Image 1 (tube, rainbow, N blue to C red):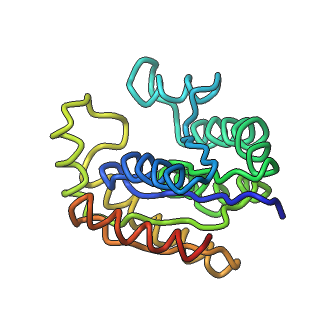
Image 2 (image 1 turned 90 degrees about the vertical axis):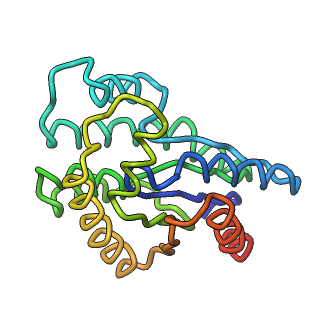
Length: 202
């Protein structure tokens, strides 16, 4: 147990995790709390390499390789960013954590195996799953004008969402606190409910 608090936002592409994580960190700071905003994949060496793969800068890697890369990035992230901040009493807000690996890498790798290589990692105090229809999520990504990444197809995102729901059921059965929010609503409505959930956990 650490004096800090580890909060993770999860969801398929286009669910709004990046926006809501930023807004949450800003809200915490406005209330005088020390908040560290971070994300996976990280900007550290392994994470930067992962981002290049996702953007198509390298030949496509299989999901087993991707799962190992994400796990390596996660180990580095926890060791060098998350855990030191928690021991310093800060609130860490992370845009994605291990459930993303389970949801995405289980597209072509065994879910139990992906979960197994993430078993020993530090678990969040609160995970907020922003649930959105895959078609809506993809429309949001397209409106942003960014180039499509590896997983940004409706059929794939439907499978990712199904994997998320299965992984969340496993996490809850293991005693993790995972709460689901309807992320199809406007940003402000999602933010209002998200802040209520976080305030209850502080």
